[in-house]
Image (cartoon, rainbow, N blue to C red):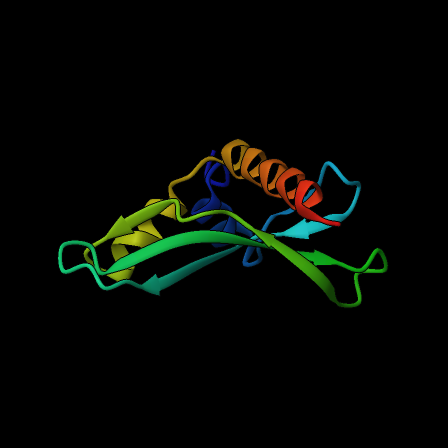
Amino acid sequence: MPDATLGGYLKEHSRPPAFEGPDGQPYTVSIEVDGEGSLRTPFCGYLIFPRWAETGLGIVGHVETPILVRGRSEKEVVDQLSAMGLQRVRDLLDDAVRLAEEVRP
């Protein structure tokens, strides 16, 4: 299936996949890449899950994963995250929401 991975879904549908989090809230997903100080792997990547208003009219928060991949180029990191299956992305969202709920006062 061409849209079974994060990158495949983005390519096939020209938009990020949407998920309902374990908190019942609507989320989408974004691939993020940052630079690091490492000479061997100067780039790292993770996912950010914007939380949308229930009306869908704006972003009202977000959760994110820890660093998931490291690589020698931004493209390498994006390619690794893009190859991730949507079920894995969903599992990472669930983990991120649960962790955020644990640290809220």
